[in-house]
Length: 87
Image 1 (cartoon, helix red, strand yellow):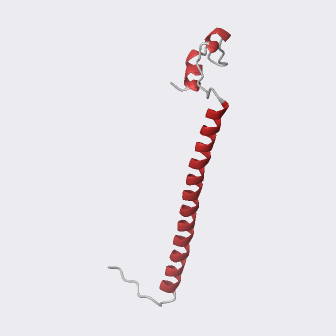
Image 2 (cartoon, helix red, strand yellow):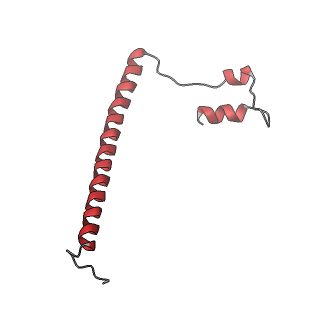
């Protein structure tokens, strides 16, 4: 169960949710035990974000290229440089 789900499940109240401190103190939160482990996690996340950013950049370039090709195709169709058939 996610931490937020656990907090919500322990809270009480209809209009304004509240939780007593003993219930909150019983929620276990997992975190890196050493600075070295934090750095490893940080480096891993940076590497993964770099891959995601590169992928997004490729997608944006592909979308731009597609839009340019679409405009060019519409232009040659409208100016009669290519024949467009219904079939």
